[in-house]
Length: 446
Ligand code: NDP
Ligand code: 2IT
View 1 (cartoon, rainbow, N blue to C red):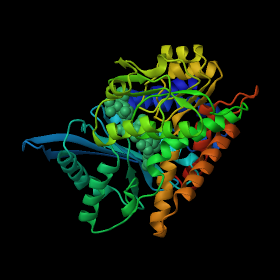
View 2 (view 1 turned 90 degrees about the horizontal axis):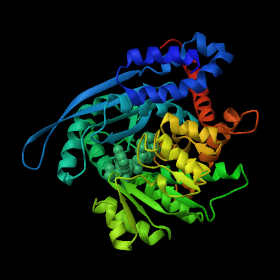
View 3 (view 1 turned 60 degrees about the vertical axis):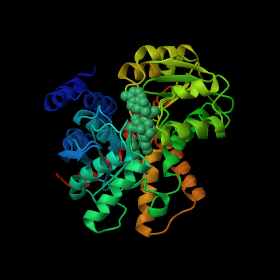
View 4 (view 1 turned 90 degrees about the vertical axis):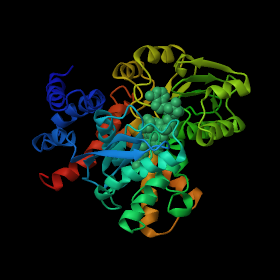
């Protein structure tokens, strides 16, 4: 490892003990940025990298709520307000039993660069709780959300910090959170994104992350004169991002052969068509069941406790969670002929897996570029809320598509190596950094 990176990481690890995912996310960025900063000493003198890795504010709070039996439950709530140099803090809320400070700091840190890449005026933040929505009734989820917002409301606002969805937070949760915010503040504002279409939401926001990751794959493929037509695509997850990535891939002529949840994955060699996708959407969004049911219904294979990367594919789109592709799986993907990875989830590849993709010089689009379509469309929702005027589906989709093309261009600008290989990791890290760093310098030592 570069000794400058090593020294920087020693400081990060000492200041943030035990926060492994945060260390991982910072190290990847430091490896791209430290050489760049050496060439641009103004960033070094202003200690931008040191400042950008320290949250502006970290809020941790108790979330007590009553379950359906009348028993008191206690969860922990978080909001990491990472960086506001180019706009209000912006980023999702995650509800999952694994949520802790280190995971949310990694997500908030990546969000800063991602949001900058969108070209929209959004700073970075992330929040959530170790609450597990699985197996909870709608009323329990509502009581949790109301309690969570009863503290969070004093820290957020349409011009301060604008949360949205992430794992475990979709339209239902945003509704409960918004209702409680409005009640406490007596204000109807665009304080959250991912709202329902009848009450301030944007068309295409539910689709945006999955669509965007597919548009990004399309852009990467086009650099090699290729496209999605006839390609076999493996997708992990079966939630919001996975569902709409599947929809767009199928629309563009690809064949999606896998879908998964935390219990296992299904392999459908004929491909998941729109009817089968409809089944997944109903299964996951309404009945909240397990993906195994797909295998039972359509008579395809189900792999309990396994991830989809053992299946031969041309393109892989991880859309579930962090560190869901390890070194061995990355090697297998490459060996099986996969030449494009577009990340719908945040930091799905371990550092060793990333190394495998970069060494093989395949098209590797890291989450902070490839999945930026979600937050970009959140930015478009904020714009519509400020104007108090909604845009049509076509208008939002076109803007999303243009934003993804521009993010790809930025990655090409900052990530193209001497031999012509586009290192999208460097491209996204440097491309996301410059605007935030310049804004921080302009705003002084704050
Ligand atoms: P959802 O909650 O809608 O879906 C998550 C999916 O991933 C489910 O299928 C879930 O399975 C699976 N999953 C979650 N945790 C794990 C785990 N630890 N191991 C295996 N599988 C798991 O979330 P989203 O689709 O919104 O988010 C998916 C990813 O995309 C996350 O990394 C998120 O940060 C990222 N992302 C989301 C954006 C958005 O707009 N929603 C924007 C950009 C990135 P199960 O049901 O069994 O838990
Ligand atoms: O990781 C992400 O970019 C998100 N979960 C979406 C954040 C947002 O504010 O829309």
